[in-house]
Length: 121
Image (cartoon, rainbow, N blue to C red; front, side, top):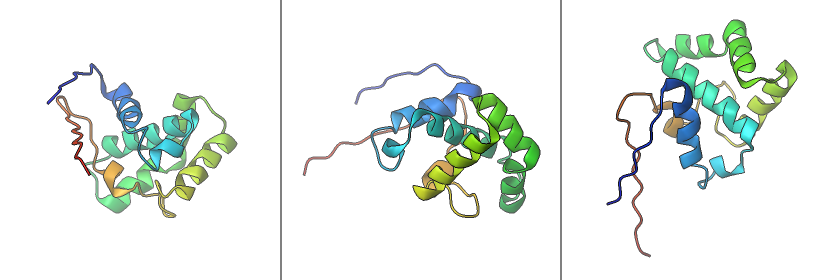
């Protein structure tokens, strides 16, 4: 097994995680800004992760947090909303703004491990 350590912090972790998944569908269909927006949604999911599921997603997509995400990514409100629509189109976000299960369970912690296992056919 090959181990590759990646230095990170909470602000960079989710974008780096998505880069590692970039060759896999549906992440492979996303452009850089869409990945940035997705990383921000994942960051907010982690930030509010201790809350009840319904309350958490209400907080993540509240007006103030949406504005915070837009400013961090550096895009306009229209562009941000368009990127969210693209994430929904690829079923990464559901119609009620929930992350797909694979991504909803990724939380930042020191020592996070992502393993790939290649098997012959």
